Amino acid sequence: MLRYRYPTTSFIARFVLAALVVLACLVPTGAGAQATATPDWNSAGDPLQGAIGLHYGQLGGHGLSFRVPLRWWLYLQVAGGVWHTSDNQQHNLGFNLNYILRQDQRLRMFINAGAGYFYHKELTGASGGQDVFDLNENWNVGGGVGIEYLQGRRWAWKIEADFAHLGKSGDIKVVPQAGISYYW
Image 1 (cartoon, rainbow, N blue to C red):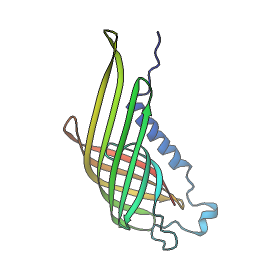
Image 2 (cartoon, one colour):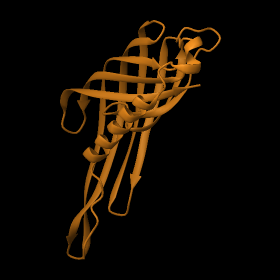
Image 3 (cartoon, helix red, strand yellow):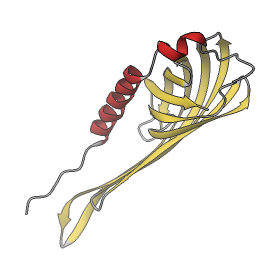
Image 4 (tube, rainbow, N blue to C red):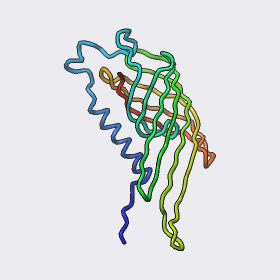
């Protein structure tokens, strides 16, 4: 019997990254109606506080993300996703705290700390009439530095470079994180 092979985590990572790049390219850059009002993080009339978007990273999780301000200089981001089929189950949840070091009209520089939980259970075959699953659970923690750029009036993208302690292996590596958000 031919069995469909579900996408791997690396395929999903490439897909999410490609989606982020495409979304960033489609976002208006200030031409037309936006030319009269320059986007500004510091606007008192429109503070651009909470946000929803997509995020990919080994600390902050990958999937749908929500950002909320705890103070004007401290943001909490929660991100995660669920991809389940009968043969392949994956989910993750990540938390990031972003402490703003510098903020001008369109650019923020921040340091961050984060933790992420990743779960992957995949059917690898059958033995003695029973299904055999490969289970991989991992907690990652770490921190690093990043920038966030306000593109247009409400869209922003961010990139980070983080030192992450990858729980199961015990390795400490520099890992990238990226995201795109819509601020309300």
